[in-house]
Length: 115
Image 1 (cartoon, helix red, strand yellow):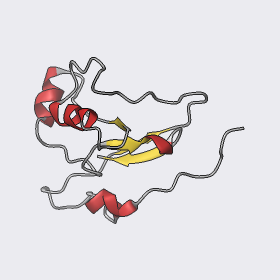
Image 2 (cartoon, rainbow, N blue to C red):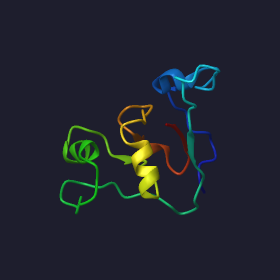
Image 3 (cartoon, one colour):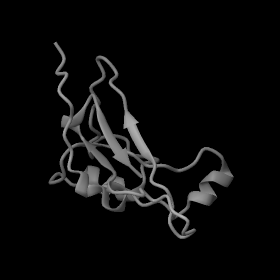
């Protein structure tokens, strides 16, 4: 039987996204936080990538973490945009909380992540 307990996570890792107004403000310099929530997918247990896997297309910062054996296994999130204009608009403008962009494997099948 699957564990139904909620997954606990350290909210302090979410920086400014951990408190009101969550990036929403009259100040145009502030950008809203986006929450990425992975719902339970019954039977889904992700397989972590390792340095022996084909990492073509994986962003360099994430590739370095995958190849670093001292790093814990995580499911990484990287947002690029679907269309060329989206890719251009997002270039260098996203900050991830936590900065390593990963969800620890122990949090599956359920977790919350902020961008």
